[in-house]
Image (cartoon, rainbow, N blue to C red; front, top):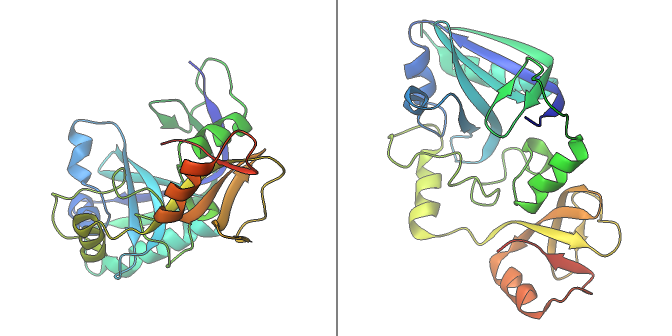
Length: 238
C-alpha cells in the first residue's frame, strides 16, 4: 500500500465523559459518523461561519484525537477549543510537531508498510482535485467553506446546530457561493500566494506548474469555454 509522509502536523486530544457532546456542539461534521467510519473530516468555524481550522477526527480511549496543522496552528486550535470548554468534563491537550503517514483510507502516526509516494506527487494530486490544504489555501477567519470546496466534505446538514452553522446552511440552501478554489495548470511558474491574477482571481497554494485560484464562478465558466491547451492558465477538473 502506498503512503505519503506529512511532517509538522499536530494532535489535539479531547478526553473525558462529555467529549462527544462537546465536539458535536462545536465542529461542522457529525461526530456520530465515527460509529460506522474510522475517521471524520471536519472544521472549526467562527461564530459567523468563517474557516478557522480543519482536522481529521478519530476515536481513542475515552475521547477523540483531532489531527491538524502543526506548530502554532495546533496550539491555536487547542486554545480555541478551551474557550468553549466551560464546565464540560473534558481534558484538552496538544502535541504540535508530529509526523503523519497517510494512505488512501487512513492517517496514522505509525509508518505503514509499502512504498512511499513523494509529498510533491500527493500535493499535485490534491490541487488537481481542487482540495485545500488548511492555511495554505484559506484566509483564517475570512474564507467560507463554500469558497474552499469544503461545504460537502466537511459538513453535516442534518446533525443540528454547531458554531457557525447558520451561515454554512444559508449559503448551501440558497446556493450563495459565488467564488471557490479552482485547480489550474500554468504554462509558466504559478504566481505567489495571494497575488491577484488579472481578470482571473487570487492565487492560493501551488506545486510545480499546478495551483489553486480563488475564482468567481462566472469567470470560471467563461475561461472553460474559451481555453485551449496553449492557454497561459488552463483550468482543470469539471
